[in-house]
Image (cartoon, rainbow, N blue to C red):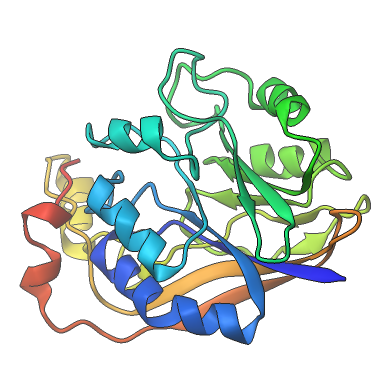
Length: 280
């Protein structure tokens, strides 16, 4: 028997949240999805996660949540990381860092699915341990009852993501990349039965620069001055992938990219107010 898992790429700000609210239930029904994994590290104004937005994700139908280099951007995320068992921070953060290294969801049919987040080391936040050694360690700690294992490789360099796919080929169900906010067209099932895609893409406004207003990003790049990188609103799209796995072996049998066009939001002010600002 087969089980389908929906993995959703970096959810950015209020436009990303609206996309989940509008489309997640329909996607889950259409693709007969039993588990939804979402990267939510950009969900609060483009950076971080809050307790209120965690509750919204649960209402939308999200089962497992991954974070990345912005894990601790919002101080109140500590409450979530200490008290919730369905949110993970990168497993190769220092051992003293608050948060879980893996999370497990049990589907209605009784299948246990685990998720692990990892952070790349090239062109990204420093002070992280080796992601390859970290994932080997965490895999050994997973309960034997877990059948499906999904890895969120949150990294800047495509080479690190591809290398992680081959490192885990045949040992996990899926390795998907996040962080670069651009969906890649290299989805495939590797030789050992591991589904792979370099980046799921962004769930948020695509008339933008990686989810931020084009004008302010351009002014910052051209002048070298700091401008608020407000979350944009135009051309909202939900990006991700549906992975089909064999229930008995945990191996992937298929992976399909998902791209859903959302509804344009007219109220610019509501999306660029204080809660949706981030200075760079």
